Length: 368
Image (cartoon, rainbow, N blue to C red):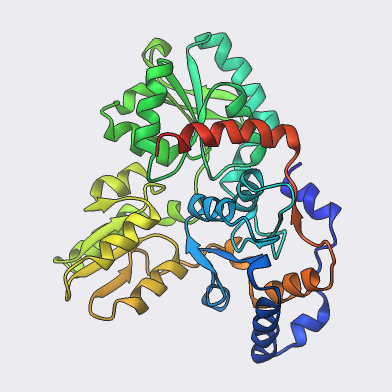
């Protein structure tokens, strides 16, 4: 089931009363219900969430860390995942059947995850097998739907994160000579390049045209990159880097590997969200940084490190729009629904999908 079907199936319209409540009223309601439910409630929040939501988090982190913390929290009957749809799906896959995972706003999707659906992937796999036989292993970024994780699990592959992609790609090449990397071409390209694979050994699968984009003998291909991307990180460009180099010659540039190869190549450092957070945390006082990642996180890092000069690599960036659908009114509504015994906004992954998706996740977790 995709996110649009999920939205159709559930009543996802925020009741008007929550729109009319003041910030103080909404915050009071959230705090009251949090205290009442106690350990029965767990609220994990992704780094990209708004401050108005993060202030109520029981844990903050990247998507996989939060899903793992949800799995470890055996007491929580309700997990209110403040992130996007695929993150809540991963939490549902890893937690027990008696635990319910809620997404405060079911419209909080991920454009990257939506760039690879099951129909496209099955068609692609059939065509790629005709070209390459059984020489391909699929890997998928955790930023993908449960159905895609399930597909990968059924075909012997694994999930990856931005922090362990290099390790998982090495593992994958021990299994098969070729890799299909879903759904983010930039993370796949940057990771493969760092492992010494040439750009001329990488092809792109275009799911819209249903064809392989490659100019050369197909026998040379080692990595097939799904033509997907992060709508936030793809907005950082070479001009942004040139401007920073010109205006702030001493400034270090650190970016997420979901950025394009050109941007990563011209930056000083590249790594996962946690890598960026830790790099700034341990940087010298007075150091200068331009950060290429989501704006809510950049603003939070700026606030947390007043002793450093920090800017966004792209001054015109906006926050992740889908992630920002989770706001204080939706959080209050979700918690009050739980308190009143209503079953709104529950993420429930199909059991078969969950079974094979968990296989893909466990192959990765065994190696991290």
